Every structure is written in structure tokens, then in C-alpha cells.
Amino acid sequence: MECWRSMKMNKLLTFCIVAAFILAIGSSANATLTTYVEVLKYPTGYFWEGSGAGVKTSPYFRYGSKNQDWEWTHTFSPSPAATGIVSATIAINAYDVDNPGSENDIYAGGFGGTLLGTLVGPSDAWQTTTFDLPSSTHTALMGGSLDFGIDIDNDGSALTLGTSTLTVTYNVPAPGAVLLGGLGVGLVGWFRRRRAL
Figure 1 (cartoon, rainbow, N blue to C red):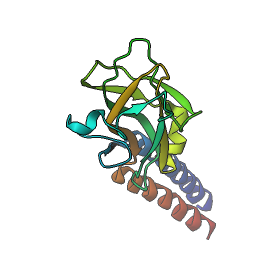
Figure 2 (tube, one colour; figure 1 turned 180 degrees about the vertical axis):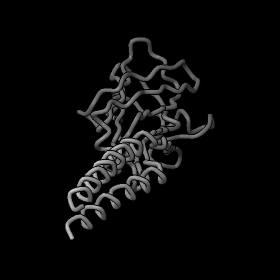
Figure 3 (cartoon, helix red, strand yellow; figure 1 turned 180 degrees about the horizontal axis):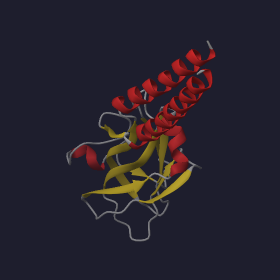
């Protein structure tokens, strides 16, 4: 009789362990994608809004030949339950990015960081250029902030930045899956304790 109870308990324990494992896998598969957006614009730093008189005046109209390159910082405040970044982009709206061959480079991690690419745009008009942030920048973002920089070409180029928009998509575990996983693990612990008594 005692052997039969022990075999039955082992089968039940095995079943509970398998169920807890399946629930744990299911909780990661049921993650919710959440999007965070932060827009930096006038009056922050050297950003300018609109096409009024300031669009081509100092300090907003920046010249590479006058060493007017600059940096700015985006913050990222995900849910405390965030488990990782799926994708991240930065969209920069700039005015008068017009010199063919100019290299108005954008960096993640500040100057000397990761080169994201070069701004593009017409003369005397606003244009938005979007850059994908590589996974190497995700750790800094999960830490709460990431610096960006613009290196304006020294060939006489000048431009105005209107906005910098950070968009981050990240995972948050579904509350129901976490609850079911926790119940499964708790049930396994209860059966193990009962077996030990």
C-alpha cells in the first residue's frame, strides 16, 4: 500500500513539474509588446520649432565650421516588469540639410559612440530621418538613458534640429501567465513538502 502511494505521488509530482515548465514557457510567449515614445523639442537644448525667424539664427542654426556640434540625452522609463527591448529607433527632424556630400552624422552613445548614419533632407525645408538603434545600445537604454550627438560637416554646412523622437518597443510579461506560472511552481513545492512529511 505504501509503495502504491509513493508511485502515485511520484506521478503527480512529475505531472506538476511538467505543468509548471509548460506554464513558464507560456509566460514568456505571452509577453505583451509595449511602446515608449519620448520627443525632445523646443525649448530643450538647441531644438527649434516651426519656420519663424529663429530657424536660421544662432543658437539654433548650427555650423560645423564653428564647432557647433552638440549632444542631447533621451531617457527611457519602461515598466518595472520589462524583460527586454525588441526594437528602438530615433527619428530626427532637421531643417536645411542640403549640401550634397555633406556628412551630418548622428551617433548613439554620444560622440565616439555608434555611428547611426547621416541626416538627409532638402534645402530650406524640414525632413525627418529615422535610424534603427542597434542592439548594442539597448543595455544603455534599459539603464534609463542614452546620449545622442550630431557631428555637423565642416564644409560650411549648417542646419537646425526640430525634434528628436525616441521610440522603444519592449516586452512585458502578461500578468495572467506570470500568475499561472507562480501557481504551478507553488503547487510543485506544496506536493514536494507533503511528500517529505
